[in-house]
Image (cartoon, rainbow, N blue to C red; front, side, top):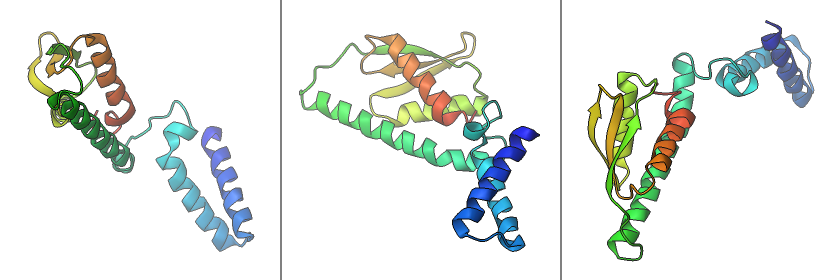
Length: 163
């Protein structure tokens, strides 16, 4: 409880100092705004708390997720373009098994969609027995790096929105 009250009081105090007013109406608004801010950023402000439990957290986490997907698509497009115009040699294409881990069925579907949206990668199959997504990549010379990249994307961006 103290972990939540102290930041709430501190943020409300900062709000009141910025306004230069300690009237009850301003303090009440400060408490509401501080509470919303703490709720939205509780994974950062209060480590150990779930970062995006509930609809509000998922909606707030969607925007960084969408930006990361856009960035991934832009990087994939650039890399495929370089190979297409022969400015970069084609690596060793192949299939990489990406562990599903703790993804839900929706999480697996979204991970597969995100991988397929990015040029240079396409989902081949989901092997439920092995617990892995089989993804064909343009450069499979370092499959461990591909697995780390997919796991990092999931942990940093997707998990909060589509676990």
